Amino acid sequence: MEIPPIRRPQLGNLLKKIRARLVWYLKEAVPMFILGTLLLFTADRTGFLTLIKRLGDPIVMGLLGLPEKATESFIIGFLRRDYGAAGFFMLSKNGIMNARQVCVALIVITLFMPCIAQFFVTIKERGLKTTLAIAAFVLTFSLGVGGLLNWILKEGWIRL
Image (cartoon, rainbow, N blue to C red; front, side, top):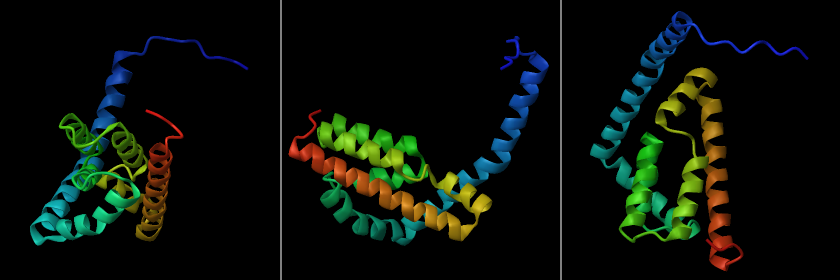
């Protein structure tokens, strides 16, 4: 097997690639974030987010064993994953979540569909039907793993 020599990158090539990726990001991802933010804003103003929260509370509190406020972090995490993780950090810092709950929440949010912008990019690349199938599987899988992990940790089979 032949290994190419390791060379220092040329500044011109590096700047060209950075520019191309930045242009792609600004043309593809930023509009998706804006659309996602607009949709979540509209959902909040129309009360749809409250409905989602009410539907999600039994799963979050029952299956995952998390406090009610964790549902909000999951919803925010769908807008931006890091915002959801920050929400769990604040719940932990304020003593609302213990180590088991933080572990379960972070595993579930990690296994989720990355974010709303990625959801829209997947629609663009794969189509609505395939994206909804992927999202349904990923949601079911992440909640299943989270529920199983919650049960294992509650039973004391693994200690944190």
